[in-house]
Image 1 (tube, rainbow, N blue to C red):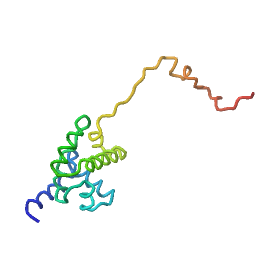
Image 2: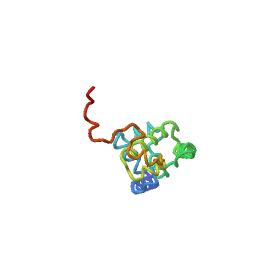
Image 3: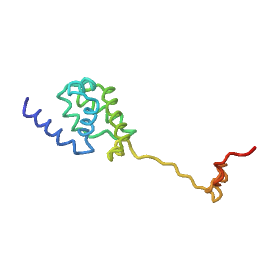
Length: 141
């Protein structure tokens, strides 16, 4: 192994602590999937040596930039674009579901809907919702 490759591998290990880089997310994905380096490289359609360069890449930005960023990364590491996008999206989904702090950066900001209520709606009257305590009792019919 050349000094250059060994240096890249060391940098990739150090980069795992940087949430803006792919290193940590890629390592977690690889561990969760139980993939060796050669299996991950096969999934990505690249050489094993390219994994360290991939780990040092910045995470792709959310849409509308994601596709362009993914294409540049795939070209840089000589990977299959479809395989790379599948891995990147799987990483984003896992991080969003796990509640990781850096998942917000990966997926983008969440939009929440808000609604103003009229005073009459607050207690459920206009919604047909009973707020009485005897609502749980069956009607005698």
